[in-house]
Amino acid sequence: MKLKYIEEVRAFSRFYTVFFGILDKRFLKSRFSLLETRVMHCAYTKEGILPSEIVAELNIDKGFLSRILVSLEKRKVIKRVQSKKDGRSVQMFITTLGKKEFKKLTKDSNNEVAGLLSNLSNAQCEILVRKMNEIKQLLSEG
Amino acid sequence: MKLKYIEEVRAFSRFYTVFFGILDKRFLKSRFSLLETRVMHCAYTKEGILPSEIVAELNIDKGFLSRILVSLEKRKVIKRVQSKKDGRSVQMFITTLGKKEFKKLTKDSNNEVAGLLSNLSNAQCEILVRKMNEIKQLLSEG
DNA sequence: AATAAATAGTTGACAAAGTCAACAAAATAT
DNA sequence: ATATTTTGTTGACTTTGTCAACTATTTATT
Image (cartoon, rainbow over all chains, first blue to last red; front, top):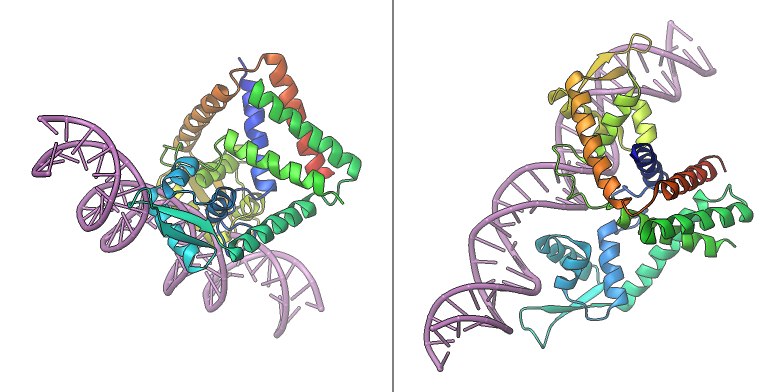
């Protein structure tokens, strides 16, 4: 059996999630939650995306998403317009402000990670990234 | 600059969390939250651990932890006794029931991970785990 | 076309998770 | 001896998440 490996994988998961603060509710110290940033990401990458698509992609409750959208619209990072094809539905668009905010979040996230890697030399980063890619390779195609 | 590395690390984090469903609170159908299981893990692996140690290890609010401990104690999976060395503090012990519950959670989680690793040979698992440990080493001591 | 069934999103009511500051008791520093 | 710091608890609060009822529209059935 692979039990030994499994335990080690789980141990790594525990370490990794704490190290990078992946379970922290707030996305860094921004005014957006992790879920909100994911929704923004959806709107950013697909103009006019429908709430139903996001519900499917992020696997969240539609009522909950509805509230998130109200909140994001109130904060002017997205706007919603009634779909012409389906009157029940709305199309979502990220605003100029939304794009700006999203880019800032990306930058902050980069800085956060940069801080966590600051003790590593470029050579060590090189090794780290290579190992990560090898892990990804193994897991996704193994 | 290390931007290239940073982006790759973030990409790996996204991949990893999705792959292992770390953000899906949904599949945890147990009566314990993710955080509660981590606290149980702490108590399981270190008899008499102090709340302050858990706060440091899991990087959570001490008030929040305090409530989690009350809840876990109420459910009889841990017990707390005042520390003799430091009267302000309490030592935590996992109960017999707690051990049983924790083992069950572990088994479920192992099965979950086992499924995700099922395509890998033992040799590949060996490689995977080695790389994970090397990453942990790099990040935590690098 | 008329009706029934399904679907998209909103809302209300609630529960669970998490934050923050004030606090008491004990330990440590001055 | 006194001041400061640390540990954990508590109250008050906000945010996050769940579930079901509801409205409006679309699609399927007759």
